[in-house]
Amino acid sequence: MGSRNLAPDGEMRPSTSPEKEYHIHERFFIAKVKDGSINTVSAILIHKAILANVGEVKSVKKCKNGDLLIEVWSEQQATAILKMKHIGNYEVTVTAHSRLNQSKGVISESELQNDTEDDILEELRAQNVTAVKRIFIKKEGRLLPTKHLILTFNLPSIPKSVHIAYFNLSVRPYIPNPLRCYKCQKFGHTIQACRGTQTCPRCSLADHDGKTCDSTPRCVNCKGDHPAYFKSCPRWKEEKEIQTIKVKQNLSFAEARKIVIDRTPKVGVSYAAAIKKIMVSTSTQYDPEPQLTENPTILVNSQKKSISNRNNLDKTVKEPSPSKNKSASNEHTGNLSRIPTSKPNQTEKPGRVSKFFKETKAMKKARLAATKKNLDHKIKDSIKKRTITKHDLLKQSNSKDNESDGISIHPSDDDVMSTDGEENPTKT
Image (tube, rainbow, N blue to C red; front, side, top):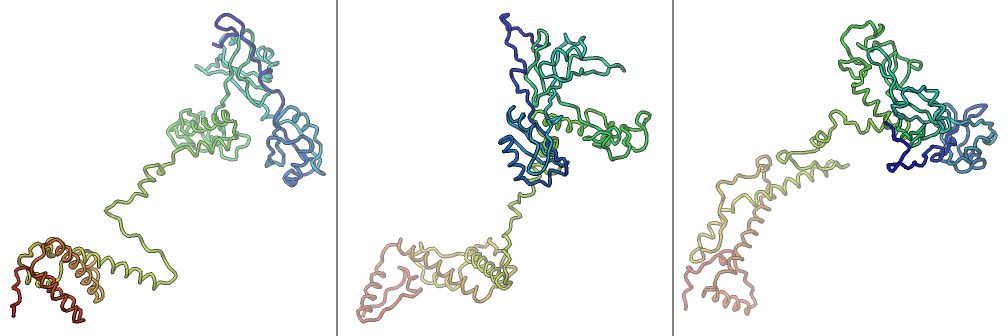
């Protein structure tokens, strides 16, 4: 039941008539060229003519039928644009748009259920209401009136409320049901604009009347097991949502449809499906393919170089030191047991790359050099940590004598690997 025009303390509420809340002037106008189409007229010429006659307007748009749609800001502009007769050398006529300057809302009041539509219109005419239509429901084959009334306003937007008798009734936006063609049963057009074939609304087959059809129901829009007029049809709900967005956000039908389609999940393109395409298991990862170059020889050489470097790395880490170095170190071991030696790992297997590529002489030479360099570093670190022996002092004195003679002698690998257990040279 609508709220009465009384405050909780019994005081009269101030009137919220649309005459005080909304501007009554039209906002949308149509300009038509008498001879020809507006599409052939220069946009610069149109803009200059509107500025000279009206000023800066809110929007200007060329329509497909050759008309010009103009939206103004104020009542002064609405009055001025109706007086515009020429755009350049083209003669034009300007009229208010018949549909865009109207809006529809719904009010509900059970105490007005017994009043006629004409009586209600007479009470609301001063509040820019041009039409009143009661909503009926069909029950047990009979049409029963409801307390809901559809009001058509001569305003671009509906008012917040209307005042009738001693009621101050709030106005809700009127959202129409989806438009379905009674010929082809598709949504979005009427039978007057239909180009399809006659289709049964019950079984979706062509060329027979749906009133006498007793076939299995099948929707022509969603292919479900229900008739085309079923209000729980997914397509019907989608069209209803489009109408809701169109009315509440004041958009065109095409713009509202695009919003609904964009936010509707698509089959097979879910977030999980998108992630599944880009995820790669760590067990199946591989080196990325090299980028193509204009010279195929450069590409082949780069691949060989990459394989060679990877092979050398695997050989250096996984393969044991040569047997020659092992025998040399074992021959001079004794008290210097703390010097580490490279021992082969019996459980380790060579890299996978060595099974598929044959080792060349250059690769073998590089591998041996890397192994020797690694062993030298380990020996030098061990010598720094051990204690100085008598043998080391004798070596230092001999090296000084040799330097005095002008001859520089570098110790060999066998001298470095000598230990304390080695016998001293005999004194003369």
